[in-house]
Image (cartoon, rainbow, N blue to C red; front, side, top):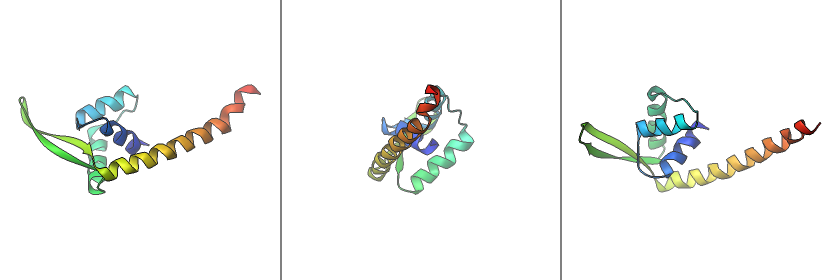
Length: 99
């Protein structure tokens, strides 16, 4: 689920790692850099994203992440899987409150 959320955030546009953490925090998913960076590396090594170095006025260059074409395909598949899972869960627990 965390990888799905990260890919979804990156799909919105080029983004810096600390901004990914901020987006996850807004969604109440508390993720630290020690968790995020290995995931980003794995996603990159699997060909799902790439990065660009951008010069910073306040320090060293920053790595901005973007989805690859393969990353977009995988994200579409995950979207379908998530919808199926959400439907299954809603169906399974939906009647619980009516009894």
